[in-house]
Image (tube, rainbow, N blue to C red; front, side, top):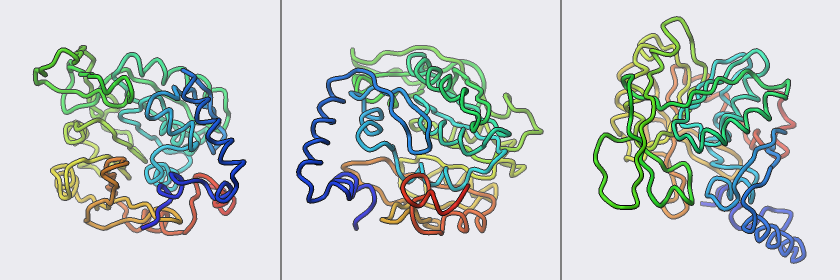
Amino acid sequence: MLTARSLLRIASPPYIFQPLQILKRLRLEFLWRSRKEACIALPWGLPIKIDPQESVGHNIASLGLYELGVTETLWRLTESGDLAVDAGANIGYTTSILGIRVGPQGRVICFEPNPEVFTSLGENVELWRKDRRCGTFDLQQAALGKEQGKARLHMNEWFLTNRGTSWVSDQVEDGKNVRVIEVPLRTLDQILGHSATIGVMKMDVQGQELNVLQGTAGFLKRHAVRDIVFEEASPYPAPTHEYLKSFGYTVFGIAETFTGVSLVLNGQSPYDPEFGPLPNYLATVDPKRAVKRIKPAMWRSFGPGRLLARR
C-alpha cells in the first residue's frame, strides 16, 4: 500500500521527474551529513535545533517531519487550552506540536531523563517560549514510572546514532559498550496531584509504557486523561492495551494512509518492520470525538490541508 511515508521516502511530488531538483536534494543531503548541528523550520512555524547525523535529526532535516502518524494524530486531537504531557520528549519535536496546539492558554509538561538530550530539549524550548502562539512549557529532567525514586538509564552504541534509544531498566546489562547512569523517577499522580485533567498524553519511553501508565492510575480511574498516544512494540493486544481497556479506554491502532491517518479499532497498528517506526496507538475516553477529528481527509499538520481548518 502506498502511504505518505513511502511517498516521502521516494521523493516529494514536486521533485518527481525533475532531475535538477533531485540533484539539489542530493546536495542538501550531503550538506546535512557534513554538519553536526542545524536549525530547521517545522511546518507549523517553530524552529528546532537538530543533529543531522542522528536518526531523529536526519529525518527532520530531510523531510521536515518525523513519525507522520504520531504528528498528525497529536495535531488533530490536541485542543486550545489543554494540559498536555510529553513522556519521552527527546529533543522536543512532539513537544513543539503540543506547544503550538495548546495555544497561549495551555501548558505542556515534558519528561526527558537523559541529561544530554535534556540539554537539547531545553535549548529548543527556549526558542519556542518566544513565540506567543505557544503555551507554557514545564521541563522535567526525570523518567516517569509506576513509583517515585531513582532509575537506571542505559545507553549502548545505538545511542550515538539515535538519541531516543536510551532505556530504563533495573536489570544488569552485559557488554562493555553499555553505559548506565542514575536518573530521578517520578509518577504523574505524584507530580500533578488529583485535581488536574490532562487533554493529551504522548508516550515514547522505550518499553516502559506499562510502568508509566501504572504511575498514572489515579488519572486513569477518573478518566482524567482524555487521549493517550503511545508506542508499543509488542503485538496487539499487549499488556498496555489490556491495562487501558480495564479502565474503560477505547484503543485504536494508528495507521498512515496516503491522505492522512486512520484508526483501527481494537487492532494491530500497521507498521514497516524495515523502515519503522514502531507501532503507535491511541487510547481515548471519548472515541466519538477522536474518530470525528481524525476522519477528515488530507494531512492537517503540514501541506495544503492546513489551510482547510484553523485549528
